[in-house]
Length: 432
Image (tube, rainbow, N blue to C red):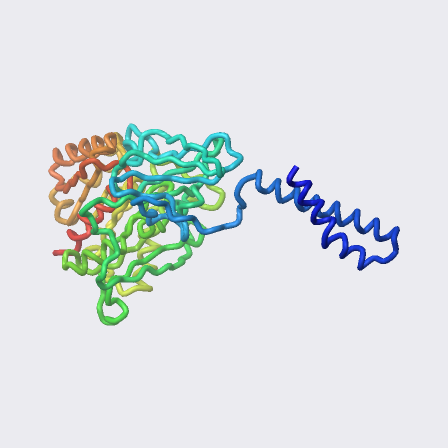
């Protein structure tokens, strides 16, 4: 009723007089008035419909919530969510006015091996607000970086409020929950190295491959100095950006080197995918393709030695990886003579370990002399992996093979385990 009154007042006032002045001929004037009136009604109806449909999809700054939380380090610029509270709770907000159900789904893979995500065991049901947004706040969660997805009416998507991670097979979202008193992977006021992106051609795989190379502080200013190299592999579902974007490997090395706890070194972060064009990536439960050894040893290592100031011998070369990358570390490191130290971070259970690698351990004293470090790490909450690693260590101990094992209480198959693994592994390298 008010809508009709407002229109009539506008029509009787300035709009009617304007049309009368512009169009002096009476029949044409009446037609013009009718057309103007119809257009005015259509515009008003469109505006009303827009209000019913909910907020505009155009970006607008989010209001600062009145609480003691802070946007996660993973939030996109200008977003207040995901939001982390001092007690470890996490708040999520998703704009989906037309959705019927919305959930936040923690990602944990095979829970019997990996354990559950520190973000939670099950999806969180979100509650719809009057403005078309959906909200949920978790109980306090395990500190660290947690992967998650938004599930809208059954469809899994990345959270628009979070940066996207893991382009190995699909993108997902992440939330960073600080661990009180733990800052070894934070950016600090210390000298910083650089992370450089390089491309090299693999003739064996028939593709161009992208690789990221960390150079330590002072690399460019010391042109006569050469450096040892750690080749560091990501896991399945991730890509070669994972160790810097999620693992903060560059900050870990910066902080270790600044404290005098690690030898300055290059860190090479390559892709673990070795498929040729048109091939499917094999699942993590099967052996990697045999070409991984020559692609690494005959192509990547010479490329790095030719383009960076390395110390180009096995004594100054180490190899490590997380999850699927740790399995590749075994296949590459134990089936070549290119590396003097190996690190397996959260290796999957391998009952076939003896069958695959027994030949490497036939002469235990000779192996121990050549392999300066055989390092294993696992979180106690990734139960299947933890127990599988202990079984492998028992087998190696029976053979007389020297190993180092470090466990991380309460962490599962996530970046907090792998950050801590690198933090322990890197200082042990190149000390001889």
